[in-house]
Length: 566
Image 1 (cartoon, one colour):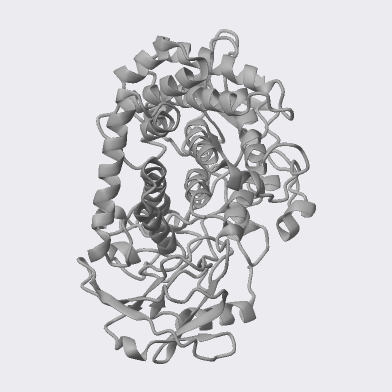
Image 2 (image 1 turned 90 degrees about the vertical axis):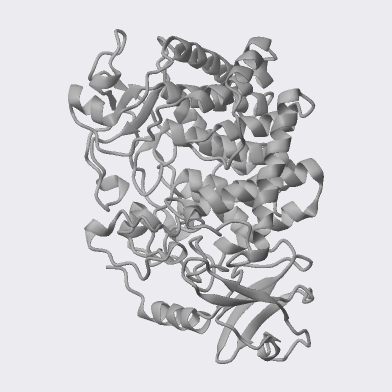
């Protein structure tokens, strides 16, 4: 058992001291809007800000409004202290309560680095070296050079039991498996953010084995997973296996202790189209890259052949229950199932069009054009295609429709801020909370607002994106900073096997927790949540996979949002 009583006592003291004051615990830039919420209704005249020496700064927070939760009825006082711009360390005090915060240029830079570095720390198939990982170093686990073809994936050239090599890649979430659908979305949204914020990402070094080459560290990290994805395509027909997995989830043990056989299972239309999309996108972005000279051509060929397989197999969806009725061993790991591939067709056709300029792909994209634009998720990848149209052919009629829809979506979000619970565009309906909501709602909506800002240069969208980020960083109903390794009230026990099994007190840093989930689907394991309220339904417990798991798509959306915030 990992116990550090001094650390636990210190964190408990900090958490209780700041329990009534909720604000960004990581860092604020000098000229940004600065707000905090204080539990209950308070006399704002009694709220003080002091510097690190305890001296009052002479700037009085301003009363904005009383925010009332529409579901819990709780009232909170919203204060604004944007007038404080001098870099330094401060505390806000209200009665016997206080909360510390920092103002500095590039306030979220270290968080951005950590969110990218987290992908290195969850790499599969290689030793994680102390030179790059410090205390989070670990020996090689899951080399994946002896992976078997599951009977569901058997073909004439690769019958069941064929051994293939499928190394590299990232562990997907709290488990040790690797999934094409989620990998494609994760890489896609980060490549979108890279193209929009190239200068920022090019300047970021995160100390990974590839840091001394000529390629941006983010692109190096994405390449580690792209290489794995290429191994998941059947060279005989272009189809792509849905996932590489053990039959059952491993226990909370280290990768080196895992003994189950690993398999590639059934090819699927959605995985193959997601693969085609991200390979086409990557082929374009990595073209002429001196560190990976052969990749772009391989990726383009892989994307085209995957697209052709999908045309021949347009409804070959992954249904694990049906698969298990026909093939053994039965598989019980994550499904990423989807019975509608229209959004995958649109994304794949879009990326192949911008890579090849072949009008047939543009025609296909128009055929599968989404009727509306919504928050990007692994199950709604059409928005990634929308981002590409807005970035690369904004004058096209279809792109103009997307622009109107995206701005309308973002304006509706911003309209809710004035009556919101925590001065944020998102999180103002019980429907905003659920599995992975911190990424699939708060960060994802923030990315949408970054595109709105790029299109209009209107800073209200940038402000809204930052407000959502600050919710994740502490200005929320639980008072947690939801990214491991950061904040005064930290997530310490994520549903993450390496973090639990490595014998280290701290979890792997830079990982975004899923967030409040009123569904509480993990109650059967004996957990007890502190509240049933939608925005308070979070449990910092290793067993809480419904609220406290981590996942590459969630971290990718965090990286994408952070990329455009400074």
